[in-house]
Image 1 (cartoon, one colour):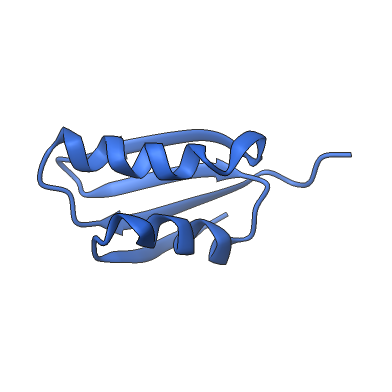
Image 2 (cartoon, rainbow, N blue to C red):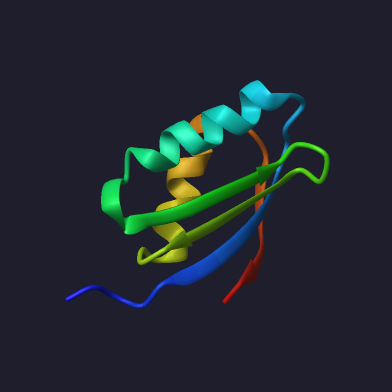
Length: 74
């Protein structure tokens, strides 16, 4: 049985597409729990749809060594 899908939006310092790809790359290591990842370098946002708790996603994004702040959780 699959858990509820949550949507989290984070502000993340991103200066280029490489930063956005790094965010996607680290999140994809979480496997099937990650349903979708959208990044915007222009807006410095990462939006994640997942069955995981927000803390798991935040800790994984911190592996990029960028400044990250949770903006919304639905």
